[in-house]
Length: 138
Image 1 (cartoon, rainbow, N blue to C red):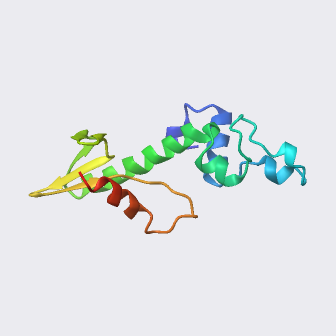
Image 2: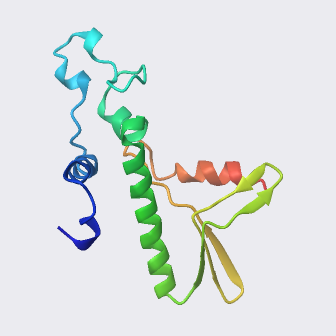
Image 3: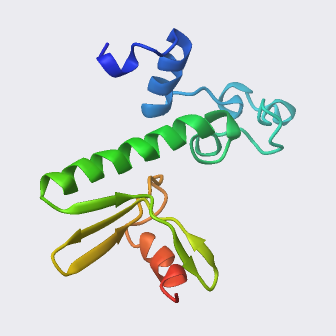
């Protein structure tokens, strides 16, 4: 194991790997056609399928946030390597509330706002443009 995993308990490490390779068992797969046994074991009230576990269930919330933060940190390191000034999680007050993107990168007279999204395969590559259309009004 790498040095960044030394503080994880064995179960946390195994569950992070299961999340990473999409190997969580779901009740919908193991129910054998019985609908009464398909609901999420954490009490979400929805059918427990892989997509629910990977994208919505609070059982995997912490692992999803850690994955997002890890991707954002990797992007930050790459941008800093390109000799840009990077501000992590800046806060901007707008007419619709406070916006908090992952990074603001600037070099000379140009600045870029970066907001990392880790999404499932069911969305196309044009999906992030929906966020730009919503937030771009400010």
